[in-house]
Length: 73
Length: 145
Image 1 (cartoon, helix red, strand yellow):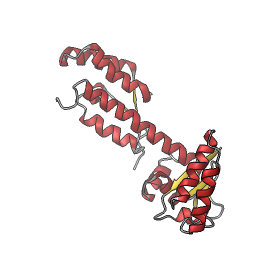
Image 2: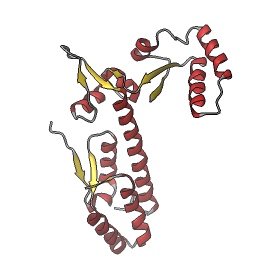
Image 3: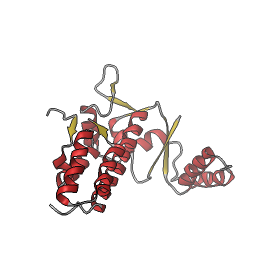
Image 4: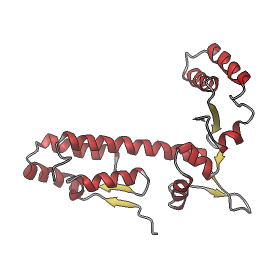
């Protein structure tokens, strides 16, 4: 089987969180490393504030957690 | 640099291979470790590590001390990481872990340094991912679809 090296996290993975939870678990088992871009995280923050009516701070707390330890794409 | 890895007493090829002369099943070994532990100056980090190691032996734990540039077999690496041998085989196949072949042999050897690094990376990923899961939950974004 071909090895998957990196998985790019698109905005639809962070919410709903079900798929992301699975991706995190696979990354913990060294199946792959997941990566993100600033553009995607910014877009996700805007979408969560507009459609889910969360505060910008609340959205930011999630993307901060992403940026804190994972890898920019 | 020295890696100190305690392996519990109930099983283990690695422990038998590397620590056969210091078996804490022997009451004399446990008593000697206990005496030494109490006399260790633990005002430094080194003293605390050595005392903790001796206390483990005193309580019947088999303890293995490995130099960071020592090499282990895939089975021993699996024991150090607390995973199956099959998991280590996949890490080797995916080149998450590096190994070398012993000359003229199919046997593989992995540097202790690399095993410790993979263990630390796994811990870091788990901690980071748990922080993200907590952030999602605190933002009220966990269950709602």
